[in-house]
Image (cartoon, rainbow, N blue to C red; front, side):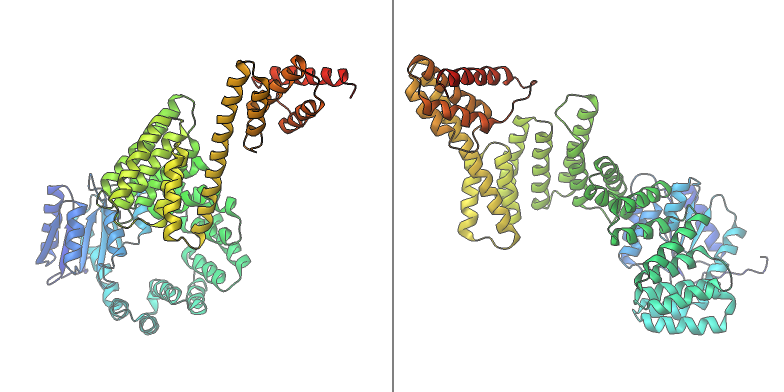
Length: 545
């Protein structure tokens, strides 16, 4: 448009670009358009600092800013912290044309998206259109900035009456505001108003979401699926389809929708997190691992960076690890441990997070059956826990479980007693009970093992009566293993063959055989089991039983 005039005088403007030539060129263009209050940032970190300190009227950011935050993450954080006023303008500038990057940028709803290279006339035309719309919507946006959302909705009605040609943008804004206020009938009216004039996929999705919240789930699903037939790359349709399906308990189908969504637009941290958590609950551990890994990478310079993402990635990876010494297993273990190292570094000031990471480290080594390193990491976690002034019951219970997993039952028992002395309530009390049960089983196994060793020592000396007495005590424990039961049968059979045909001892042999059940032919104890069973049968016939 040749008559498009733009005067940016008095506007506080931020330019973000890592290339000095690009910053200089854009600053020159804006100066020609009257701008006299221009700030420049060379990277995402500096841009966010400026946005935290100043109320900008306009931000023009390049998408690709090299290492660190990109333009999408700047917009993301500006929205997250509410530091970008509704009356302000955010323009994304990029030379990127890859679908995933374009989709990622558009998802956070910049006011405009300009592709490099562009001329002064193109910039003037785009800013002219933006300023015209912003000026008309200024009363609505001011009300939004004041938090007066219902008032903003009323003002939007007035704008629509005065500017009927702005039906689409005003209805879209009004629909969002009504949804925010849970005024779903009003939102439905706004979206329907648009669809009566022209087909608009966003309005149809808006209708579907309204129907969902109004309780008509079937209509919502029908509308979303119909929209996807026409616009298969409409990623928010997949998102909402997943949410609704999860509400119906159809988690596997919901996961498929989120997988489709991340294929289209993989650079959204929250979507990757949603997929990871859903896949983890569905026990789709490979999908969960990939999603959390992407979320971890994307959130590294994002406002959504969280220690939980690292923990969830490692948890998913642990399910995919095994004891086999394959290249894939070693690489995955190494990747999990690197993630935990990064977690410790990124959150080094938070001892609770460092404790969680060290516990996860021990569990990772357990997953690959590296008992020595698992024990070493458990010892480190113990040291970290000692540095926490007031450890929570959750942290102490977790430490107790790792003590048990790494063969430190005495320390576990001491921790349990300490917690009982201080008092544990609620769900944690039930968990403490489960830990006590595990300790009881371990103690029983250990006691049974000690008595078994005593019985073996007597047997090897030919002290059959003493051996039988020791094995009888060992087998009283339910935790006594097959080898202990076979040892007991062996001692009784030897006594019957060498001393006397004791029917009571023979009946005990059959009782123990029944307790063992069956030993598979590939079990190394199978031959011994079968030999003792045949001997018992021969002795039974000899006794006339």
